[in-house]
Amino acid sequence: MTGRYASFTFVDRITALEPGVAAKGSFHVPAHAGAFPSSLLAEATGQLAAWAAVAKLDFRLRPVAGIAHETIYLGAPRAGDTLETQIRIDSCEDDAVAYQGWCRIGGATVLELHDCVGPMLPLSDFDDPAAMQAFYDVLRTTGAPLDRFAGITIVPLVPLAHEPGRSASARLDVPRDAPYFADHFPRRPVFPGTLLLDRMTTLAAGVASEAAAGRQVFARRVSDVKLRAFTEPGATLTLHAAVEPGGDRAILATLEARAEGQRRAVGGARVEFEVVQ
Image (cartoon, helix red, strand yellow):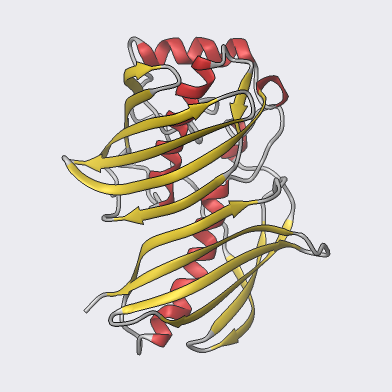
């Protein structure tokens, strides 16, 4: 299986499901995957919630983008790991799905998602409902082929401005074509919000490390994630990160992404970095 359901689909099997209520799933990160950002832990967990919501709503609607009040990272994925995801849905209606989520590797929790909300939009605007239902049936029975995911090419940042230890800005040139658009989404390609968050966090981590006298930092807590607009292929974004002390061994960063030439914000978040001794 290549391309479709292999480029940006992080559920291999749905191991337990009560549509609109709860679900468990798994995804194996192939040994050849290369870069697998920690933000994809949230993507895998959110995709499981999306399948549970779509099944509840008879493949009429699907959650797209949304808000995550708090994401806590307790570990990082590596090639060869198997992610065990779990979600609990608080509400699932035609306007939105609200849920909590967890991801574990080897029995250890590496991610917690708290108070996430995904606005519902017509599924047929983004994907083929019949194709999604057929793949859902695969996930609920035999499971999708393992190791089909070929990895992600990380989009580089182009530096724009830099105040060491305080702030940085960079340009992000979204590709006009990339494998992940085959899954996200075939009828309306959108740059994945979790990849945007990874790029913003990476920009902030460099500044936070400078503020910590060059020591390594780890993004422990991400809060108030808001994706306010779709980012289409070929778009140009301006990213900005500003940091401030957050107490003993902690540095706080405020992140923002704006569409170049437009006043509207595309996304934003706050990140708490832990200083690694």
